[in-house]
Amino acid sequence: MNKPPVPLKPLSTTEREALARLRAKIDAIVALGTPQALLATGVLGDTPAGSADLLTFHRRFQLLGPQLGSIGSPAGYVTVRDDLPDATGAATVLTLGAPPQLLRLEVGPELLGPATPILTYQALTLVHELTHTMNDIGSFPVKDYAYRTGWAWNYLPVKLAVDNADSYAAAAAALAEQLERKPGRYQEAGSVPAQARALHAFAQQCNLGPALAWADFVVNRAWVRSMDSAAFAGETVANGDWASTRTAWGKDPDRAGLLAIEQQLLQLGVLAYDRHSGPLTTGLSTADVAAVRQVLTWTTGLKHTLNGIEPVLVAVGREISYDPATRRLTVPFAVIALAPADLGRLVLKAVVGEGVKTGRSATTGVAKPGTDVRARTDRDCSILGLLVKHDRPAEHEALAPVLAELAGRPLRPVGGPDWEKIQTALKWAVLKEISSRWTVMAAQVEDRAELPAAERTALATIDDGLATDLARLTADATWFKGPDAARQFDAMGLALAEMGAVVARFHRERGERYQALRLKLDALRN
Image (cartoon, rainbow, N blue to C red; front, side, top):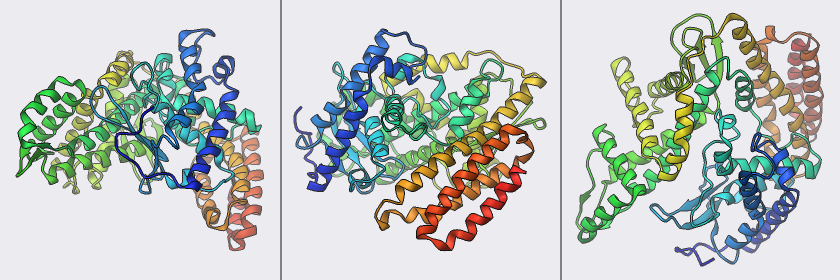
C-alpha cells in the first residue's frame, strides 16, 4: 500500500506500542473466527454453512489484523485526532467521488493511550473502523447500514450484514467473550437493543418494530450523507477551472448527488446562494458552508435521540408524541396499525418537531410557536428525505430494497391480547436489560479500579446512572411482579453491593448514596 495522499502526523512511540497491543488483541479474537464460529454468533442470521455470504464475511474477518498492519505504522494512514467526538472513537476518511481513496483512519487519543483493562473495548471499536478501510475488489464495500445500538439492527438482510461494519464488531464481541470467558461482557447495552429485540419478536403482529427500523435506517443514512455534504461544502475551485470541474462533477454520480443536495437546500431556504465566484475561487459562501455543517450537527443529534427513545403504548390519543425529558415516545392504539413507513414518518415527525421547539433543528434558532414550528418540522423532515434520496450511489442501491420491503408491509391491526403482550414485553425488556447491565457493570467497575487515579474518576458518579435506572423501574413497578421479577431484582442487588464496595475504596463519601439505592431496590423487590 502506498503512502496516504496527505502526510499525517506520525504516531509517537507510546501510540505505536498501543497500536501493537490492539493488533495482538484483534489477532487473538480473529484466531477464533472459523466459519462455524462466526455462524454461531448469529450475526448473519440463518445463512447456511458454506454460503458465499459466510465465506466473504469469514475472509474479511481474517484480514482484520493484517489490515491494521498495512495501514498503521510505518504506512502512516493512522493518525490521532484530539477533537474526535467521544462517542465516535475512530473514523475512516475516504475521498469523495469515484473511485474513492483512503485518506486516513482517525482515532481518539484514548484509543491509543496506556495499556488498560478496557483494551478489548478499544479493539472492538477498531474492528468496526478497520472494515471501512478494506479496499475489496476495487472498492470499499463495508458501510454503515445499521448499528447494534439501533432499531434497525434486527432488520438487516444477510447480504447487507456482510457489508455492514458493526456486523464485524458484533461477531468480534461474541468471540472476545469466549476468549476471555466473560459472557455478555461486550454486547451492546441499553434499552433500545433490548426493546428492539422484543418488538422484532412481534413483527408479524405489530408494525412498530419495523417502523422504528425504517426510521433508524433513514436517520442513519441521512447522517452519513450529511457528513459527505459538510465536507463537500468546503471545497472550492479556481475560477478558471470551475466550468470544467462542474461538468466533471455532474458526470460523477457521487458528486452529482451532493450538488443536488445543495440545490435542494437552496430551494428550501437553508442556503442563501448557489456556488459563486469570488476573487480567486468558486464555492459556497462562508455562511452557507456553516449552514451545511449545521445540518450535520442536527443529524448527529437526531441519530443520538432516536437511539435513546423508549416507546410506550397507550390506549388513548391519535398522535405520536415525544418527551425529551423522559425520552418516552408515546404511541397510541389509533396509529399502531399503520404501514411501517407511514408509522415511521410519524415517529420522525414527533421527534424532529420536539427538537424544532427547542432549537435542535437543521437550521439555527428556536422556532416560534404555532405555524413556524410546523413549517420548520416539515422542512427538517424534507431535508432527511433529500439526504437519503441522494445518498452515496452504492449504499442507496443496496438499501433501497430494504426500505421498499419495510414500506410495502401491510397494515397490521393489533388485537387486545397482542397489545397487552407487546406492552408487557417492552416493560420486561427494560427490566432484564438493566439487571444484565448491572451485572456486567459490576465487573467493569472492578476493572476500572485497577486504572491509574486519573482514569478512575468515573467511579465517583456511577451511582447517578444507577439512580436513573431505579427511577425508571419504579415508574413501571406495577408491571414487575412474581418470582421472575424477584430474580432480576436479586441479581441487581448483588451487583449493587459489588459496585458499592469497590467505589467505597476510593470515594467513601458515596456510601450513603449506595445505601439509599439499596432501599429503593428493596422497595421494588418487595
